[in-house]
Image 1: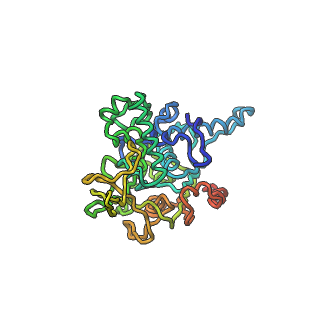
Image 2: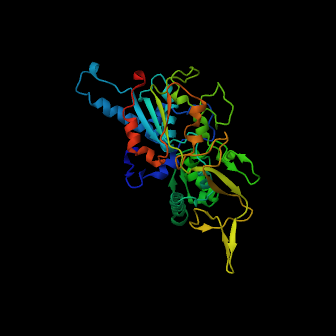
Image 3: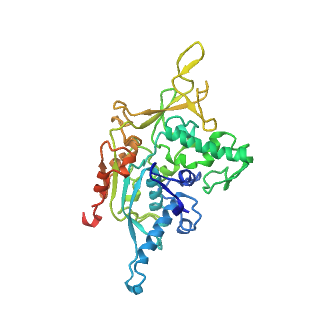
Length: 401
């Protein structure tokens, strides 16, 4: 259950990190329409199939605990909790909270969980990140934290193969997996480590960039391949993938913040207050990935070749030279010179680039969306920086602005 997760005060992460990758909402058959199909019954049935269900758990808990304060009063005098303010950091906070707000359940007439009033996002990658592409292609070498994640994947796979154990998977996003990963599956349909990754950690795909970020061997700049397409973010953003697309009056990528959105089908309401988009910039950040089909040889000695770049497959757990003829990817960082698809100098908060953190709110402005630039505040510090907290604390209700 969500209330059993332990917070790691050193790493500033939850102890069940893999659960975030397992349960992130994603569906092979999703319809890109700005709505996450989830009923209130599915949100609250205690199965926690997706991360948005975990979010709903805490919203329900907030409502219960708030209203318990008034149990001693006559029923006519008790106060209900109809809305809350939400502060969300990075992908696991922002995408999950948006999935709640943009769920079909949220707009149901008899929705009993709290609505969202003010929605404050801190370094949320609204258009994903380039970095997961290397992980999805089974290379965990780009960062020490990726190596740690790769070790977790290896540990899980080894449990199945060597210990003949079964891994339970609650997310139903992968058609190859129906609740479990078994030794038979790992030796057959999931024998390719990439397929195991997709089955065990489908949420990695929900972090993938939607904007053009792959610099191909032939020099072209492209979006992710269809098998790695981030349908969750494309759905949340109503099909708008990046800021280079022509403006469309029919598209509403910021649907969660549009208080006066035209009521079509079942969509209405959404947040009742202000959307505050807090981001950092001016730091070296993951920008794109460069595709290669050959290893890069740095030099050689009388003993062996020396390679400029290596890859780390999670099942091996060690750095090796890329195989000739096989595609591999290296992360490209912003450097104060490279430009994005709009011709602007690419930058970010040390993790998320500007294209992903705030550009869509410039492209599709709205009266209750406010963008705040916190300069060179690092990505992870946006949630803990005293200046950020002092800025957020006095935010008034939209009616007071």
